[in-house]
Length: 175
Image (cartoon, rainbow, N blue to C red; front, side):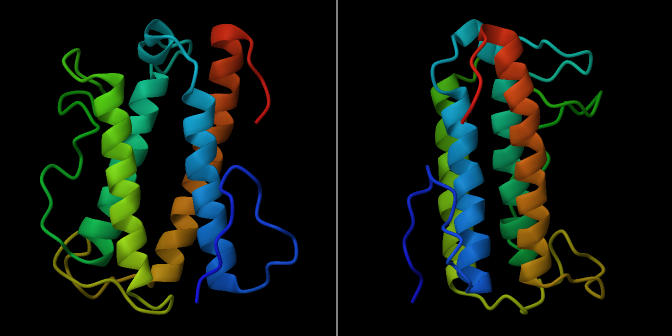
């Protein structure tokens, strides 16, 4: 049975079950991402303060598609619509269309995270990804534990980047 933890708080240092610890940290970073975006103006969500040009809203969309690519298309080999839908086909940079609202992107992110949790709940950490989706040819199939650690490091990196962007946008720092 999986314990339940408040994703607004770092998992307790008494947590020693590897699966529970990994999943608790993923939820902690998913929640941290949303907390850092909360309260940003529509303008700040859609404008970049960095030379690379990514925006906070594009980062949220990117991480929704990261969940889709690694767990739905990758681990389960589900045939998904546009696994690279966060990228501009011409430049490869993250993009959010003017017609896409911040709420739509947030809902997309939450839906992908919920689907990821469902997938993980029904699988063992050592289970290899199915072939035929992202991992084609099927002889290269990482285990779920590798995929989850990859997601964890991606969240940690991007949430750290968002810390800086948020401070530049409106001076908010911290959790």
